[in-house]
Amino acid sequence: MKKYSIFKYVVCTMALIAVLGACSDNSESILLGSDDRLYFSSAEDGRTFTVCASGAWQITTEVQWLSFSKSNGEGDGRTRERIIVSAAHNTGAARQASFQLSAAGKTLVVNCEQEEGHPFKLGTASLSSSLQVGQSATGVSVNIPYEYGYKGMKLGLHVSLGGEAAEGLTVEDETITLEAATGTFSIPIGGTPARSGKLTVTISTDQADVAPVSLNTTVNDRIILEQHFDLCVYGGDFVGGHPGTMPTWIKDGNGKNIPPEPLGNLQSRTANQDGSNDLFATMAHSYLISKGLEDWEGSKVYERPGYIKLGTASAVGKIVTPAFGALGKDKSNVEVALRVAEWVDEEGGSLVISFEGSGTPSIATYTYKHVKAKAGSEWEDVRFTIRDASADTRIIFTTKGNKRFAIDDIVVSVK
Image 1 (spheres, rainbow, N blue to C red):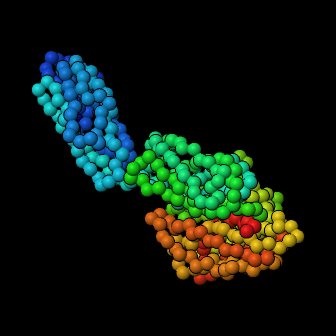
Image 2 (cartoon, rainbow, N blue to C red):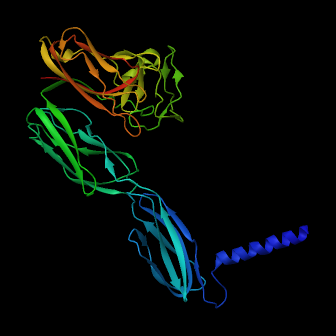
Protein backbone atom coordinates (compact mmCIF):
# COMPACT_ATOMS: atom_id res chain seq x y z
CA MET A 1 0.00 0.00 0.00
CA LYS A 2 2.82 2.36 0.92
CA LYS A 3 4.66 1.72 -2.37
CA TYR A 4 1.44 2.33 -4.28
CA SER A 5 0.97 5.71 -2.55
CA ILE A 6 4.52 6.78 -3.44
CA PHE A 7 3.99 5.70 -7.04
CA LYS A 8 0.71 7.64 -7.19
CA TYR A 9 2.41 10.78 -5.79
CA VAL A 10 5.21 10.60 -8.38
CA VAL A 11 2.74 10.19 -11.24
CA CYS A 12 0.63 13.17 -10.07
CA THR A 13 3.71 15.34 -9.63
CA MET A 14 4.99 14.54 -13.13
CA ALA A 15 1.56 15.27 -14.56
CA LEU A 16 1.46 18.65 -12.82
CA ILE A 17 4.91 19.56 -14.12
CA ALA A 18 3.82 18.66 -17.62
CA VAL A 19 0.73 20.87 -17.36
CA LEU A 20 2.71 23.82 -16.03
CA GLY A 21 5.38 23.44 -18.68
CA ALA A 22 2.98 23.50 -21.61
CA CYS A 23 -0.73 23.85 -22.27
CA SER A 24 -0.99 20.65 -24.29
CA ASP A 25 1.14 18.21 -26.18
CA ASN A 26 -1.55 17.14 -28.64
CA SER A 27 -3.67 18.79 -31.35
CA GLU A 28 -6.87 19.04 -29.31
CA SER A 29 -8.46 22.52 -29.20
CA ILE A 30 -7.20 24.21 -26.03
CA LEU A 31 -8.43 27.16 -23.92
CA LEU A 32 -6.98 27.62 -20.46
CA GLY A 33 -6.89 30.61 -18.10
CA SER A 34 -4.71 30.73 -14.99
CA ASP A 35 -7.54 31.88 -12.67
CA ASP A 36 -11.31 31.89 -12.51
CA ARG A 37 -11.41 34.70 -9.92
CA LEU A 38 -9.24 37.83 -9.38
CA TYR A 39 -9.15 40.16 -6.37
CA PHE A 40 -8.06 43.83 -6.45
CA SER A 41 -7.34 46.46 -3.80
CA SER A 42 -9.11 49.83 -4.00
CA ALA A 43 -5.98 51.48 -5.41
CA GLU A 44 -5.25 51.32 -9.11
CA ASP A 45 -4.16 47.71 -9.16
CA GLY A 46 -2.97 45.01 -11.58
CA ARG A 47 -2.96 41.20 -11.51
CA THR A 48 -1.11 38.72 -13.72
CA PHE A 49 -3.28 36.37 -15.79
CA THR A 50 -2.09 33.76 -18.27
CA VAL A 51 -3.81 32.51 -21.42
CA CYS A 52 -3.15 29.30 -23.28
CA ALA A 53 -5.20 28.78 -26.44
CA SER A 54 -5.33 27.07 -29.80
CA GLY A 55 -5.63 29.74 -32.47
CA ALA A 56 -7.15 33.20 -32.05
CA TRP A 57 -8.27 34.23 -28.56
CA GLN A 58 -10.06 37.33 -27.27
CA ILE A 59 -10.93 38.96 -23.93
CA THR A 60 -14.11 41.03 -23.56
CA THR A 61 -15.88 42.75 -20.67
CA GLU A 62 -18.87 45.03 -20.20
CA VAL A 63 -17.30 47.29 -17.54
CA GLN A 64 -14.94 50.22 -18.00
CA TRP A 65 -13.02 49.83 -14.75
CA LEU A 66 -11.28 46.67 -15.98
CA SER A 67 -8.54 46.92 -18.60
CA PHE A 68 -5.99 44.52 -20.13
CA SER A 69 -2.41 44.86 -21.30
CA LYS A 70 -3.48 42.72 -24.25
CA SER A 71 -7.03 41.71 -25.15
CA ASN A 72 -6.46 39.37 -28.11
CA GLY A 73 -3.81 37.18 -29.65
CA GLU A 74 -2.92 33.99 -31.50
CA GLY A 75 -2.04 30.90 -29.45
CA ASP A 76 -0.18 27.73 -30.44
CA GLY A 77 -1.94 25.49 -27.92
CA ARG A 78 1.27 25.04 -25.91
CA THR A 79 2.59 28.44 -24.76
CA ARG A 80 1.17 30.33 -21.82
CA GLU A 81 0.86 34.04 -22.67
CA ARG A 82 1.12 36.46 -19.75
CA ILE A 83 -1.11 39.57 -19.59
CA ILE A 84 -1.91 42.12 -16.88
CA VAL A 85 -5.51 42.67 -15.82
CA SER A 86 -5.90 46.13 -14.22
CA ALA A 87 -8.65 47.65 -12.08
CA ALA A 88 -9.08 51.43 -12.00
CA HIS A 89 -8.85 53.28 -8.67
CA ASN A 90 -12.07 52.66 -6.75
CA THR A 91 -13.46 55.59 -4.75
CA GLY A 92 -16.79 54.02 -3.82
CA ALA A 93 -18.42 50.81 -2.67
CA ALA A 94 -16.91 47.37 -3.26
CA ARG A 95 -17.69 46.16 -6.76
CA GLN A 96 -17.80 42.99 -8.83
CA ALA A 97 -17.57 42.31 -12.54
CA SER A 98 -16.29 39.65 -14.93
CA PHE A 99 -14.50 39.25 -18.22
CA GLN A 100 -14.78 36.51 -20.82
CA LEU A 101 -11.89 34.67 -22.46
CA SER A 102 -12.93 33.09 -25.79
CA ALA A 103 -11.08 30.81 -28.22
CA ALA A 104 -11.51 27.56 -30.13
CA GLY A 105 -15.28 27.74 -29.79
CA LYS A 106 -15.03 27.86 -26.00
CA THR A 107 -15.58 30.63 -23.43
CA LEU A 108 -14.21 30.95 -19.92
CA VAL A 109 -15.64 33.45 -17.41
CA VAL A 110 -13.29 35.11 -14.86
CA ASN A 111 -14.98 36.89 -11.96
CA CYS A 112 -13.34 40.02 -10.49
CA GLU A 113 -13.83 41.71 -7.13
CA GLN A 114 -12.45 45.07 -5.91
CA GLU A 115 -12.51 46.26 -2.32
CA GLU A 116 -14.30 49.40 -1.13
CA GLY A 117 -12.48 52.67 -1.76
CA HIS A 118 -12.66 56.31 -0.69
CA PRO A 119 -12.32 59.57 -2.64
CA PHE A 120 -8.86 61.12 -2.51
CA LYS A 121 -8.82 63.78 0.21
CA LEU A 122 -6.59 66.71 1.16
CA GLY A 123 -6.02 67.50 4.83
CA THR A 124 -5.32 70.74 6.69
CA ALA A 125 -2.52 72.72 5.05
CA SER A 126 0.25 74.46 6.98
CA LEU A 127 3.43 76.45 6.30
CA SER A 128 6.81 74.86 6.98
CA SER A 129 7.89 78.15 8.60
CA SER A 130 6.64 81.70 8.91
CA LEU A 131 6.79 84.49 6.37
CA GLN A 132 8.27 87.89 7.20
CA VAL A 133 7.89 91.09 5.20
CA GLY A 134 11.01 91.90 3.18
CA GLN A 135 12.53 88.44 3.78
CA SER A 136 12.83 85.93 0.91
CA ALA A 137 10.33 83.08 1.04
CA THR A 138 12.98 80.64 -0.26
CA GLY A 139 12.86 77.50 1.84
CA VAL A 140 9.25 78.05 2.94
CA SER A 141 6.70 75.57 1.63
CA VAL A 142 3.02 74.75 1.95
CA ASN A 143 2.65 71.28 3.50
CA ILE A 144 -0.55 69.39 2.67
CA PRO A 145 -1.39 66.00 4.19
CA TYR A 146 -3.50 63.61 2.11
CA GLU A 147 -5.20 60.23 2.39
CA TYR A 148 -6.85 57.63 0.14
CA GLY A 149 -4.30 57.98 -2.64
CA TYR A 150 -2.08 55.23 -4.00
CA LYS A 151 1.57 54.79 -4.90
CA GLY A 152 2.24 56.13 -8.38
CA MET A 153 -0.85 58.36 -8.45
CA LYS A 154 -0.14 61.54 -10.45
CA LEU A 155 -1.61 64.74 -9.07
CA GLY A 156 -1.68 68.14 -10.74
CA LEU A 157 -1.53 70.99 -8.22
CA HIS A 158 -2.50 74.65 -8.44
CA VAL A 159 -2.01 77.18 -5.65
CA SER A 160 -3.58 80.64 -5.60
CA LEU A 161 -2.61 83.41 -3.20
CA GLY A 162 -4.95 86.09 -1.87
CA GLY A 163 -5.12 88.76 0.79
CA GLU A 164 -3.24 91.96 1.43
CA ALA A 165 0.06 90.15 2.02
CA ALA A 166 0.08 88.17 -1.25
CA GLU A 167 2.01 90.89 -3.09
CA GLY A 168 5.52 89.72 -4.01
CA LEU A 169 4.85 86.00 -3.41
CA THR A 170 4.62 83.33 -6.11
CA VAL A 171 3.77 79.63 -6.33
CA GLU A 172 4.25 77.57 -9.51
CA ASP A 173 1.82 74.89 -10.67
CA GLU A 174 3.31 71.41 -10.60
CA THR A 175 2.53 67.73 -11.01
CA ILE A 176 3.65 65.28 -8.36
CA THR A 177 3.66 61.49 -8.07
CA LEU A 178 2.52 60.07 -4.74
CA GLU A 179 4.76 57.57 -2.97
CA ALA A 180 2.11 56.05 -0.68
CA ALA A 181 -1.62 55.92 0.01
CA THR A 182 -1.28 58.38 2.91
CA GLY A 183 1.32 61.08 3.44
CA THR A 184 2.20 64.76 3.04
CA PHE A 185 3.44 66.66 0.01
CA SER A 186 5.05 70.11 -0.08
CA ILE A 187 4.76 73.00 -2.52
CA PRO A 188 7.54 75.64 -2.39
CA ILE A 189 6.73 79.34 -2.13
CA GLY A 190 8.85 81.85 -4.05
CA GLY A 191 9.39 85.60 -4.03
CA THR A 192 9.59 88.09 -1.20
CA PRO A 193 6.49 89.41 0.61
CA ALA A 194 6.17 93.16 0.08
CA ARG A 195 3.53 93.77 2.74
CA SER A 196 2.60 92.32 6.10
CA GLY A 197 -0.94 91.22 6.91
CA LYS A 198 -3.32 88.41 6.07
CA LEU A 199 -2.48 85.79 3.46
CA THR A 200 -4.82 83.13 2.07
CA VAL A 201 -3.32 80.11 0.32
CA THR A 202 -5.77 77.93 -1.66
CA ILE A 203 -4.67 74.55 -3.00
CA SER A 204 -6.65 72.76 -5.73
CA THR A 205 -5.94 69.69 -7.85
CA ASP A 206 -6.77 68.35 -11.29
CA GLN A 207 -9.06 65.76 -9.64
CA ALA A 208 -12.62 66.96 -10.23
CA ASP A 209 -14.01 65.29 -7.10
CA VAL A 210 -11.34 66.65 -4.71
CA ALA A 211 -12.40 69.75 -2.76
CA PRO A 212 -9.82 72.57 -2.59
CA VAL A 213 -8.33 73.44 0.80
CA SER A 214 -7.38 76.88 2.11
CA LEU A 215 -4.82 78.08 4.63
CA ASN A 216 -5.29 81.42 6.35
CA THR A 217 -1.99 82.72 7.65
CA THR A 218 -0.06 85.94 8.24
CA VAL A 219 2.99 87.65 6.83
CA ASN A 220 4.66 89.14 9.90
CA ASP A 221 6.38 92.49 10.31
CA ARG A 222 9.18 91.06 12.46
CA ILE A 223 9.48 87.57 13.93
CA ILE A 224 11.19 87.42 17.32
CA LEU A 225 10.60 83.75 18.19
CA GLU A 226 9.66 80.76 16.04
CA GLN A 227 9.52 77.04 16.89
CA HIS A 228 8.00 74.36 14.68
CA PHE A 229 9.58 71.33 16.41
CA ASP A 230 10.63 70.01 12.99
CA LEU A 231 13.74 68.42 14.52
CA CYS A 232 11.52 66.16 16.62
CA VAL A 233 11.02 62.96 14.63
CA TYR A 234 10.37 60.11 17.07
CA GLY A 235 7.21 58.71 18.62
CA GLY A 236 3.72 57.95 17.37
CA ASP A 237 1.50 60.69 15.98
CA PHE A 238 -1.57 60.67 18.21
CA VAL A 239 -3.05 63.68 16.39
CA GLY A 240 -2.92 62.03 12.97
CA GLY A 241 -3.33 58.50 14.31
CA HIS A 242 -0.08 57.12 12.83
CA PRO A 243 2.55 54.84 14.40
CA GLY A 244 6.21 55.83 14.69
CA THR A 245 9.63 54.77 15.94
CA MET A 246 12.11 55.48 18.74
CA PRO A 247 15.77 54.60 19.40
CA THR A 248 16.86 52.30 22.18
CA TRP A 249 18.41 54.91 24.49
CA ILE A 250 21.77 54.61 26.21
CA LYS A 251 23.21 56.67 29.10
CA ASP A 252 25.87 59.37 28.80
CA GLY A 253 28.46 60.13 31.50
CA ASN A 254 25.86 62.11 33.48
CA GLY A 255 23.30 59.32 33.44
CA LYS A 256 21.12 61.11 30.86
CA ASN A 257 19.55 59.47 27.81
CA ILE A 258 21.14 59.79 24.38
CA PRO A 259 20.69 57.82 21.14
CA PRO A 260 23.39 55.23 20.37
CA GLU A 261 25.94 55.69 17.59
CA PRO A 262 25.35 54.15 15.15
CA LEU A 263 21.62 54.46 15.68
CA GLY A 264 20.86 50.79 15.04
CA ASN A 265 17.38 49.32 14.80
CA LEU A 266 14.50 51.53 15.93
CA GLN A 267 11.70 50.41 18.22
CA SER A 268 8.14 50.55 16.90
CA ARG A 269 5.78 52.97 18.67
CA THR A 270 2.00 53.08 18.44
CA ALA A 271 0.18 56.34 17.73
CA ASN A 272 -0.27 56.86 21.49
CA GLN A 273 3.33 56.15 22.53
CA ASP A 274 5.97 58.84 23.07
CA GLY A 275 9.24 59.07 21.15
CA SER A 276 11.38 60.02 24.16
CA ASN A 277 11.48 60.06 27.91
CA ASP A 278 10.73 63.41 29.60
CA LEU A 279 12.86 65.74 27.46
CA PHE A 280 13.89 68.13 30.24
CA ALA A 281 14.19 65.61 33.09
CA THR A 282 15.89 62.59 31.55
CA MET A 283 17.35 63.48 28.14
CA ALA A 284 20.92 64.76 27.73
CA HIS A 285 21.47 68.50 27.15
CA SER A 286 23.17 67.64 23.86
CA TYR A 287 19.95 65.94 22.77
CA LEU A 288 17.93 69.08 23.60
CA ILE A 289 20.34 71.13 21.49
CA SER A 290 19.90 68.69 18.59
CA LYS A 291 16.14 69.26 18.79
CA GLY A 292 16.41 73.06 18.83
CA LEU A 293 15.30 73.25 22.49
CA GLU A 294 18.49 74.54 24.11
CA ASP A 295 16.88 77.65 25.64
CA TRP A 296 13.51 76.09 26.43
CA GLU A 297 12.37 74.70 29.78
CA GLY A 298 9.57 72.38 30.79
CA SER A 299 8.38 69.29 32.60
CA LYS A 300 6.53 66.19 31.42
CA VAL A 301 7.39 67.05 27.80
CA TYR A 302 7.80 64.26 25.25
CA GLU A 303 8.97 64.06 21.65
CA ARG A 304 6.48 63.35 18.88
CA PRO A 305 7.01 63.55 15.08
CA GLY A 306 7.00 67.28 14.27
CA TYR A 307 5.58 68.43 17.62
CA ILE A 308 5.74 67.84 21.38
CA LYS A 309 3.26 66.23 23.74
CA LEU A 310 2.83 67.56 27.26
CA GLY A 311 1.57 65.66 30.30
CA THR A 312 0.89 62.03 31.18
CA ALA A 313 -2.21 60.13 32.26
CA SER A 314 -1.49 61.22 35.86
CA ALA A 315 0.51 64.48 35.64
CA VAL A 316 0.14 67.85 33.91
CA GLY A 317 3.04 69.10 31.77
CA LYS A 318 4.29 72.57 30.86
CA ILE A 319 6.63 74.23 28.38
CA VAL A 320 8.39 77.61 28.78
CA THR A 321 9.62 79.59 25.77
CA PRO A 322 12.97 81.38 25.63
CA ALA A 323 12.93 85.07 26.57
CA PHE A 324 12.08 87.62 23.86
CA GLY A 325 15.64 88.93 23.69
CA ALA A 326 15.18 90.07 20.09
CA LEU A 327 12.93 92.90 21.32
CA GLY A 328 15.93 94.74 22.72
CA LYS A 329 15.40 97.50 25.27
CA ASP A 330 11.97 98.68 24.15
CA LYS A 331 8.59 97.29 25.13
CA SER A 332 6.44 96.16 22.22
CA ASN A 333 3.05 94.68 21.49
CA VAL A 334 3.47 91.19 20.02
CA GLU A 335 1.19 88.60 18.48
CA VAL A 336 1.47 84.92 19.36
CA ALA A 337 0.22 82.14 17.06
CA LEU A 338 0.36 78.42 17.79
CA ARG A 339 -1.48 75.13 17.30
CA VAL A 340 -2.76 72.80 20.00
CA ALA A 341 -4.51 69.42 20.08
CA GLU A 342 -6.13 67.82 23.12
CA TRP A 343 -5.40 64.16 23.87
CA VAL A 344 -7.79 61.81 22.04
CA ASP A 345 -9.46 60.38 25.17
CA GLU A 346 -9.61 63.58 27.25
CA GLU A 347 -12.20 66.35 26.94
CA GLY A 348 -13.24 69.57 28.63
CA GLY A 349 -9.75 70.96 29.15
CA SER A 350 -8.21 74.36 28.51
CA LEU A 351 -4.82 75.63 27.44
CA VAL A 352 -3.48 77.88 30.22
CA ILE A 353 -1.24 80.84 29.27
CA SER A 354 0.93 82.63 31.83
CA PHE A 355 4.15 84.65 31.83
CA GLU A 356 7.50 85.37 33.32
CA GLY A 357 8.66 88.97 32.97
CA SER A 358 6.69 91.84 31.44
CA GLY A 359 3.51 91.76 29.42
CA THR A 360 -0.26 91.59 29.58
CA PRO A 361 -1.94 88.85 27.51
CA SER A 362 -5.23 89.29 25.69
CA ILE A 363 -6.34 85.83 26.93
CA ALA A 364 -5.33 83.64 29.85
CA THR A 365 -7.00 80.40 28.70
CA TYR A 366 -8.14 78.74 25.51
CA THR A 367 -10.82 76.03 25.71
CA TYR A 368 -10.11 73.09 23.42
CA LYS A 369 -12.82 72.46 20.86
CA HIS A 370 -11.70 68.82 20.81
CA VAL A 371 -12.97 67.97 17.34
CA LYS A 372 -12.33 64.24 17.00
CA ALA A 373 -10.97 63.08 13.69
CA LYS A 374 -11.39 59.61 12.19
CA ALA A 375 -7.96 58.45 13.35
CA GLY A 376 -6.96 60.89 16.12
CA SER A 377 -7.43 64.51 17.16
CA GLU A 378 -7.52 67.79 15.24
CA TRP A 379 -5.10 70.69 15.42
CA GLU A 380 -6.67 73.93 16.64
CA ASP A 381 -5.29 77.39 15.88
CA VAL A 382 -4.76 79.77 18.82
CA ARG A 383 -3.89 83.46 18.53
CA PHE A 384 -3.48 86.13 21.18
CA THR A 385 -1.56 89.33 21.80
CA ILE A 386 0.78 90.45 24.54
CA ARG A 387 0.83 94.14 25.35
CA ASP A 388 4.09 95.71 26.52
CA ALA A 389 6.23 92.60 26.12
CA SER A 390 9.96 93.05 26.71
CA ALA A 391 13.26 91.22 26.37
CA ASP A 392 12.65 89.30 29.61
CA THR A 393 9.17 88.01 28.65
CA ARG A 394 8.71 84.24 28.56
CA ILE A 395 5.44 82.40 27.88
CA ILE A 396 4.41 79.38 29.94
CA PHE A 397 1.96 76.93 28.38
CA THR A 398 0.21 74.28 30.47
CA THR A 399 -3.30 72.87 30.75
CA LYS A 400 -6.28 72.70 33.12
CA GLY A 401 -9.16 70.22 33.26
CA ASN A 402 -7.21 67.58 31.35
CA LYS A 403 -3.71 66.14 31.53
CA ARG A 404 -2.32 65.71 28.00
CA PHE A 405 -2.12 67.91 24.92
CA ALA A 406 0.13 68.62 21.93
CA ILE A 407 1.62 71.96 20.89
CA ASP A 408 3.25 73.06 17.63
CA ASP A 409 4.07 76.00 15.34
CA ILE A 410 4.72 78.68 17.98
CA VAL A 411 5.41 82.05 16.32
CA VAL A 412 5.83 85.37 18.16
CA SER A 413 5.97 88.50 16.02
CA VAL A 414 5.88 92.26 16.53
CA LYS A 415 2.49 93.70 15.61
